[in-house]
Length: 473
Image (tube, rainbow, N blue to C red; front, side, top):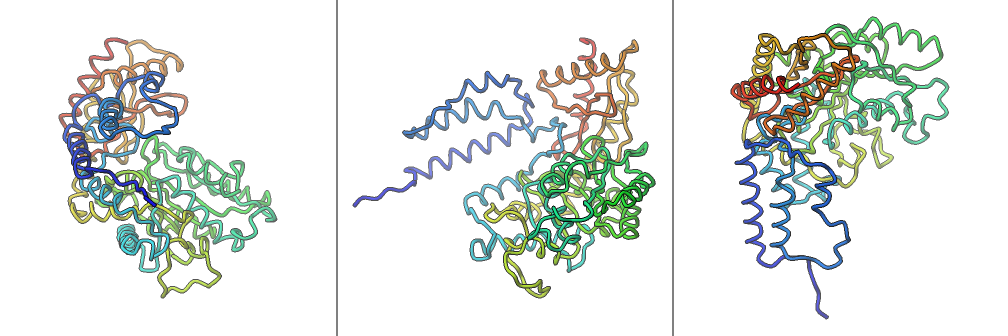
């Protein structure tokens, strides 16, 4: 009886074609446009939704890729992609990911991915060292910041309610309460909902003029919740809020959490990479005192998505939360990663990080991040010296919020409309790609300088573009 397989004839030719496409895309990444300005319905019409019962030939597929896919991808790696906190992936990280895809390892068990398991051990050890945790620390690689927050808060819940994973939290006498700043990432909202705490038990504490959580108001809210019969259990500090890039006063938050016996989690998804610089270390003073930390290698460590990381100061807590066996935690034993996170089968995320870190070294990555910080300062200086624009918030990391200032005074509605019009003109130009941001009632523009290809010349190009575009408003 004849059997079939899914192997491809002339595989070597098509792999060469694939690598040629990858090479051309990376080498041409700096060419405009940054954003393909195409309506969703128009793009939708280029593709067929009918189930492909019969296969097609490989050449036709490559034609589709070259005509209908690549031209309409947003160029995350373009030097003037300055939008969301998704940074330009490094070429070494991309090579590592390509090899990783071919190997297709699933490190939920050692036998399912021996090397992938060891490499994840290595990556977790490296990140623990970077953030100041001891050999007692542990962790797991996840998809990104949202899964990082969810994983960390699940661990925190288990640390406070030991039978939460078995019995749930529905019978608790005192509902648990989580605290974070009023500009924290929406991942905190999602996490408290998923783990059964509920958004009504999430307290969003106002921030100060530097957009840092006000610890005095946090203290007042905790006292009130205790009096109301609730159980405060976790504070989420920020290292780089998604709007302004603010960094909370971590050392003071650590003191507060210690004094009040609260779990202290730090969301460093955005700003974690700055730990490689002296400026970043100073801003993150006290981060090593956190009970858990989440950071995203696919942000300011220049790794292709998806790559997130959750660290725990004491790895027994991550095991006690996600273990799949009844045995008690043994600090001398190496556990499979199925006991360290929510997912079972998952792609290895360690290989591309290991490959990129080994190739570049942390010293070079540090220099790139310092360069990003210098570009941020340069852009602020350009804005300060330009009568058309005004910086809208203090700058701590790589995010710069700013607004166009028209010659006549406008109400808030007209102001917001004007900012969005300018943003749309920038997008339509294809020269650069920025993001909107909400600061209070105001809509402003945000440029984020965490791209390894951005230069000082790119900032000059952006400023010249915006000066020309404001004349059209």
